[in-house]
Image 1 (cartoon, rainbow, N blue to C red):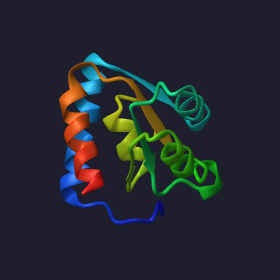
Image 2: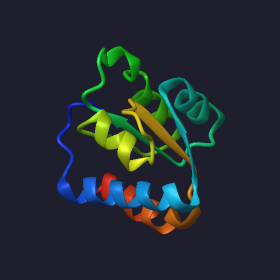
Image 3: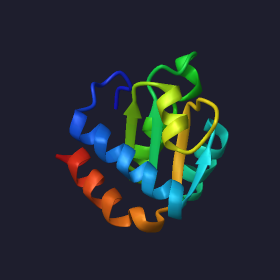
Image 4: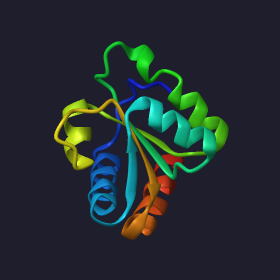
Length: 116
């Protein structure tokens, strides 16, 4: 998967909805090292990365890793938006949802949209 892919508004909106629900009731790992570990351990349910991450090498390995483990990945345009959506006070390059909380159904819907 190419990280520069333009993500549809529908998928963006659904991703923000998922992150909002997870922020209230689930659990995330933030930062590329934590996200990488969550993917490798198979605990990540959804991975979200920021397209404006610089240098790109920081997150370049995540799409292949997610594909290998069958974990859905969404690329949002900005680190600021990703950080804010995940309830952080700072921008972040990547997050992994490790406990869905109330977002379980929303993640299923998002995953099926991504496959479409």
